[in-house]
Length: 191
Length: 399
Image (cartoon, rainbow over all chains, first blue to last red; front, side, top):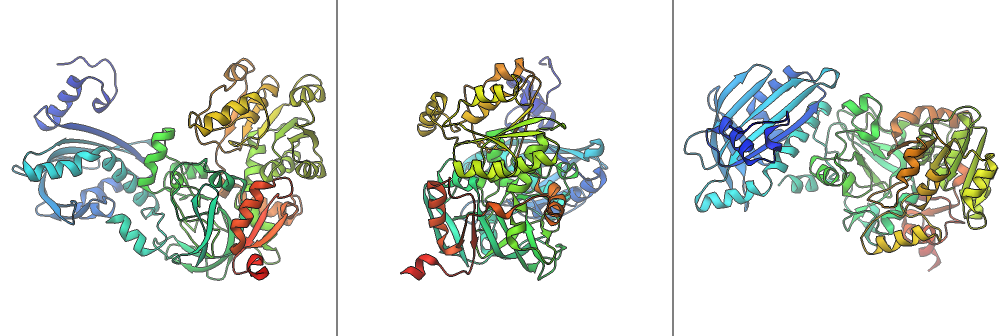
């Protein structure tokens, strides 16, 4: 057990041991990547939690997610964009949930994309709610795996950051900001 | 529609492009009736601002008529509006504190990455000012899409001409905020570097806020004349040693507040400036900052430094020692236009602030490329160019 000397989030640690332990706590394994991102949203915690918990709504701000089908209260099916007009699909299972506070999930066994994560909602006084996403991601093996790794590993951290920003925009302003001038441009940006 | 587009350093053209459309509920489409070329557009023209793309439509000072609205807009078709150059959502934490130019949501998520890398936090969205600030199409065009139209644009009462209110879009609030950031106390002496539009509005604003004396510094005689007209004393830095003059004019104290309204392309043949210029041209540094250095050195102990001037990158030889040892305060930032528009509109109506004196040239949008060149080459004569879309091109008429 590495001795943590400060209060900083594990994903920002310079020590690989600290990061690995945090990964293990999330996924049970020490391999993979750990990403932490936080955003402050000027809305009540319960409103943000309710929107996020309805997984069907997530594609409205997650640009790379095509569709999410809710199979059971705990299990959902994710269809995510891949290059050349293809898509990758997997099931995600909720592993922990606390109303208005936390949703943790992991990809189900045998999924092409092995990932797990948690989204946490904390009160931030008159600033609203701090939403923190912690994602553990393991690049998969195999030919398809390599392709997927390419998409995801390219910038999973940036993707998470952008998704959180769009979530904030949608919750605070009712829309996702775009600088496109025409509908055609807007569609090209989302493609 | 016709629009002024950027294609590279000193290469702007009027092209025909697709008309803008309503894309989000809070959008409005404005038919531009008047638009101006800003001094900061010259930074784009000179290639000093990164993240420009060929075909980008420029222009962030504009006004016009509402022709189309989304379901969430509070504007009505036919209304005449002036549009702030800062794109603010009105609902984030910063907008709640009236720090509209720090809006979290005006800049699309993907474009926020660049600002994050460069500045630590993303910039807000601005019209027509590179992809760092959102990549929004600007208003030097026949039409423009205005996001968050329920927050930004101000409706112009009947009886006011475009030219009286157009500068509410940027330079008037920017000059006002510059004076406000100088935290002027009655009886203060305020020195203003740069008598372009922002500097001249800062001169007027400083007097309205109670400054006893304003000293305006420039090297263009025409601009110094305008500053004098508003009651400023003037220093022509080509004829006068500025620091020595300021010290003597303020009884050896130095100005109580200093305003740098020059910015990253400061002119003047000074050693530090020449080094900056070499560094800028070899990409070792981006900004030439002679004016802010001089302002900091001249400012009195415990005084205030206000910096409305636009800077984009990194500098060296910043007089940090003088800044610390004298206990100065620096305030700066893009302008929170939305905060100042209503009050300044009233000031115009009441005749407290003059605006139209600035306009030296009026042209068709079609002649905008010639306007950019003229503005760039002759900043003595050219104080402000106002473009009108749909007006017959003088260049074409002459052919």
